[in-house]
Image (tube, rainbow over all chains, first blue to last red; front, top):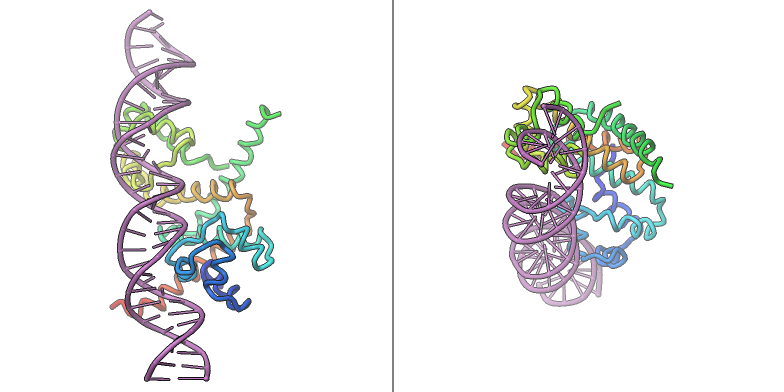
Length: 108
Length: 108
DNA sequence: TTTGACTTGTCAATATTTGACAAATATACA
DNA sequence: TGTATATTTGTCAAATATTGACAAGTCAAA
């Protein structure tokens, strides 16, 4: 069972034997705030995903998947929605793609 | 293929033959802003879901599913994440539930 | 061309998130 | 024990984002 994004960062940090202060510096972040992120009391900022990927030499796409799935999980957990939502969301993504295609006939 | 949440509202409004101004009043909203919502230029505010359900006599759970799936779809569409994210999200929701259970041994 | 429906642009007010710092607590070890 | 380092927590002003409101615009039907 997947851990939260905060716990994932903590795991990476520990595996690489960095202190909060050390990792926070690499991410251009306050160590107190990184602590909160790891403990799920603040959100990790999207714009630092790239730095995080570079720090631990991770594939950005994988990291993004971790990050956005966390985002979704928190939202759905908080709102008591059942997993039927995923089916709808997939359909809507397809719809948005389709919509973008038909509209981009103007963009050339 | 599912429409966006804004288009869904517009459909409901048209089926019920209401003007923007009429529906906006029921939702305690400016008609100009409702127009933007229907056209995907603003977000519908979560806190009005209940009013919307009452107005059109819809099941709130179904409406929520429409709403949050839209929210997720927009996010994932914007970030180019593939559908693997859904699998991770489901796992994380389970993890959060599990975590809440083990922690709530204190809440009694 | 008037009327009603809808769209678009703008902006101050409000709400939320963030960065930063101080202080408290925990941990390790001489 | 004491002390150095690591981590956690609380707070708050500043930066950002969202919302409500209104004016001015387009559009379509009569």
